[in-house]
Amino acid sequence: MEKAGGEAVIPSRKNAVVPRETDWSRYKDRKLVERFWPKVKQYRRVATRFEKKGRNFLAFVKVASIMILLR
Image (cartoon, rainbow, N blue to C red; front, side, top):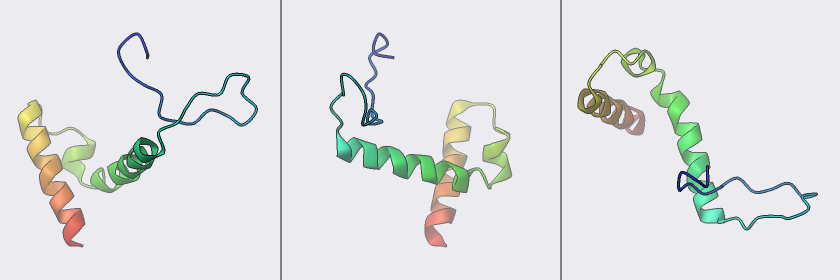
């Protein structure tokens, strides 16, 4: 993952020999995203990737997000 330019966001275990530093604000944002996706996937068009073009799929994800926020 690091070779591709990514960073680890999940904290290392307590008993790790070399613990890595954790950015807790990024970890908090990651948890929000992981909890949000199952809510968006309740909409069939998003879950089955009904829209084949990326821009159309993104547009429907935005519509589904708005519907969730309005609940």
